[in-house]
Image (tube, rainbow, N blue to C red; front, side, top):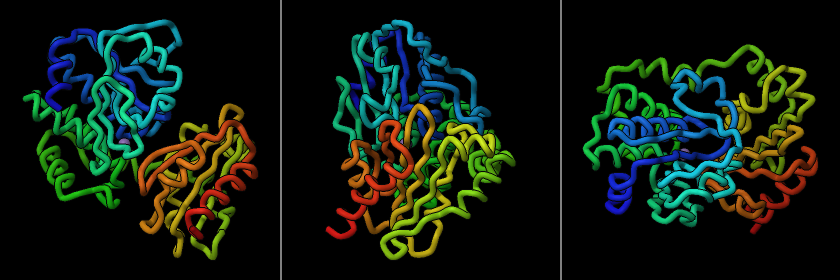
Length: 316
Ligand SMILES: [Mn+2]
């Protein structure tokens, strides 16, 4: 951590990048980092890939949607992004810039920056950024506390998942001392969906598929389904938790297909490492949560590939 702190102190121009399809942790950790850099008087920009998922727009609009123009910075900070492909088009900012640091909790991260702090035992990148801010003696504002709280709650499912440690709960307790509406944050990220999405969830529940004697439960939505319910791929939220909640499920999957990409989200209920399954298909992630983008193949083709990879892990 000391090398990273020195690099941050020495440089003046920063770009913050996180993974595509930014989730609560990606946004929370990046926004908190951005605010700290601005407090230090640094010139810093947080670039997002495309639009931000609607349910997370309440956090802040202090980001720039990357427009593919050539940009270079003294230092790029990559947060919560397990590998370079997860930066999407913003990889060009990374390539054109001088130095880079990475802070991440994906154990599959091989350390693609000049300096890397990677800890697969951490609940979230937001928890790691909280620790960094404390170590740097940053003045954590209520807004920064809200960002970090949102990121940690997002990745731990409100401290429900096994990635949450006693240390995570202590960080949450410290963040709750700040002046922001923590119940509102949880309600927005977990307990409220637009009616279109609620109806889509109903359709998905009715079309769940079960494999390997119920050990694998699979949900899917292609562009026709998304169009019918008028939900954008970006706003499909926590749908993978629907198959995950089916009794007997060890591996839950959600396949979504748009004209641009076919994406598989995976969740484990503890017995199998879904990071390993994702890696077999060119994706990455954690033991309990992982994802893969598999080109633009059909839902049926994605199912076939996925079930084959799961079979190797379950039977092997
Ligand atoms: Mn994360």
